Image (cartoon, rainbow, N blue to C red; front, side, top):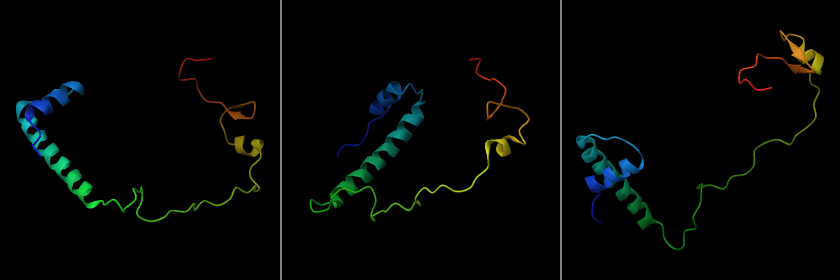
Length: 98
């Protein structure tokens, strides 16, 4: 497989709107070539009998079921707030919206 050229890196940089120095083009060309080589090696290992997976071990949902539990009333929750309005915390307006 041919390596990534500095012209291809320059093209990718232009598409990404990145300004790269000439020495960076060579450096990134080498790095991208190594990355593409690593991906190719991984592709060689995966056989037809190995299904694609997102995780090597089966995952199960570990969250508990929702249960209603005693909690603060709105009045208790707002009791320490510097300002409240209509059972909500009142905060300074920051976006200029109504």
